[in-house]
Image (cartoon, rainbow over all chains, first blue to last red; front, top):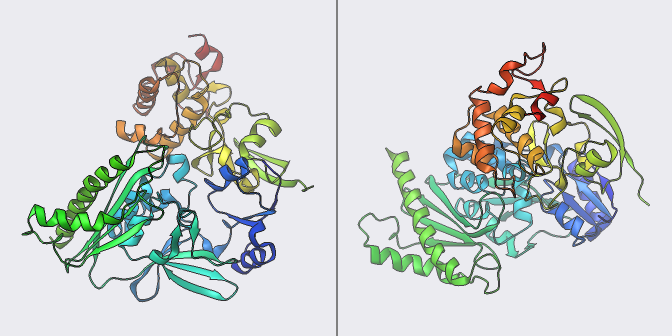
Length: 289
Length: 182
């Protein structure tokens, strides 16, 4: 590994100052499950690695925010998300997505902010957060900025964060109608591989269905069924299929990926999309019962 | 030239101070600076689990942790499983069930299994499979490894019955030499 300096700031202001001073020469270190691999491969060659794990404002945890929102600390790990009773109850798709990231060892380190900032098309927490309308709270030299997650992802590896900005938290705004959600994923081998297809579905009592999917294009996508068909128990299978086909129409899986061929991914997206929908609808009924 | 940083950490219960370079991983420091070569270097991308250690109560791949990140934390390696030179019940169960062929992955398997048992004392088979999914065994001893974890959880450890554990040691601990001779 190429040498670099190490900084472990204890305030958010220090982190921002380091990012301003070093520009692209600074890299943030949270869980390190991607960064350390890239450092070893020489894909990134920073002057300074800035470890953000001891900054109180970025500490792990799920807390109540303003007006009924839920705030997830930037360095909350996948293990913590998957086990948290509030996440399991109110954001089931997120708990399920976090529970299948890598292995136990990876989940014990990998953080939510890291998963989002890497902006991998296969990010396991992204579809769940998209269907729950998550907002990225970014902070930088000009202060805080709130970015809807759907606008945060630009393309693989690229986010809407400015040069000296970082993610301080993820906020789940309160919904007028509670969203029941579920996550589905396909991978080649459990415990190691990235997702070949990842999809989450969220349904609210008003019948609005949100579907988000990843690993089938340059960034995760969010689509909303405004017709009410997917949540309508009287809708025919043909009608539902037509809506799902429209929702998945923007999937553009790579033809050259080593992980899965495009035909397979598209076929699995339809299967998993349906499973996620059924699971979310079931959970909505459970909650209503 | 980037200066070394002194870090203080607790390794297998003993406080240690080591001067580390920021770009050295916990794996490198454990093996090269502290001489704890039980933790194995293998894939270096967090896929094989051969370098698994317990960091502040959680299993991690030591190849993906910078040593400086461990400042002030507690590390438990495979060397920390045995007590007073006696194998733990888990280690004995690995021998008993024939879970070891080439042995290269075993330190990581043991540490992952220990972390699992620390959290879930009586894991189901699916919980064991998930708990050890981050540890590859190229000899394919998964079945025997899972059986060893189950036997430990069930308190079987019949290999250990002949050796009375020393006071204060893990229940069912037995001598390293005795275990290897089986």
